[in-house]
Length: 162
Image (cartoon, rainbow, N blue to C red; front, side):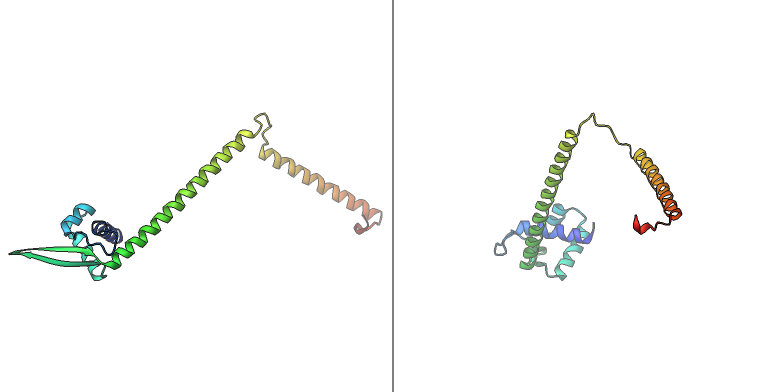
């Protein structure tokens, strides 16, 4: 899994468990709990948590009960704020995407209505045929201009007087 995606998954799991309110104190999570929520191996989750600890996005504490100890992780206030900002941006982008999809659907409907309004008995214009006729017209026009130019030359009439 891409390390950015892994970090995002771990952070969102921690924040959702902890709560999106920076003042709310939720339950910290163990690496094993994060693994079950995010997927991946325990080793990859631990590696991701170490990276988040180094970035000060996650804080850890160790709870000891006799000879057993348990490492617990919680998001920092900065992490909660960053996740909230990113989730807000994601929501806005999703809304924009839905607006664009609606606009495309409206244009598709408009196009279908325009296509239905075209007279089906109207003769289809063949593009190749149209281009062929255009070339013929241009050739005839060129010939006509040459003839007029020669007539003007023979009669000593400058072309600016035409």
